[in-house]
Length: 148
Image (spheres, rainbow, N blue to C red):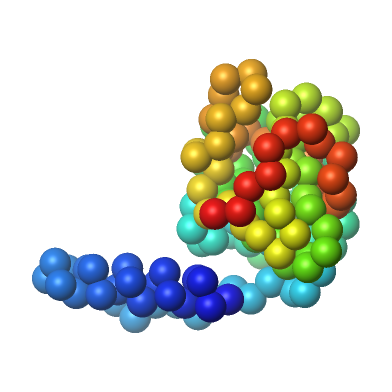
């Protein structure tokens, strides 16, 4: 939490010094302890799914408050997951390109996060942004562990 507050203060100071007008920020969403929060936009913004379970297919899971917008609707869909916050203090999250926990993958550190999936390149050469399709609580994936 402190790392996010610090980042927001630095960003606000940068905008202020640049002379950019800034509206009051919306209340940040606080993820439930031991859950994963999956966001439709980078930097933990947009639609959010606060989830306590591993999911084999994000296409079947919807953001609360938007019954027609799934976490995954085909590669590069605008509202696909773009950032993930892991609030489980002792368990990594394995995130997979395909459903059923299959295909190229990466891990998010216990109590870690990835603010922009675009920073991750999968073993198939694709950017992880807007293309991932399932997640599994645990260290099952052989991919790299991230926390940024």
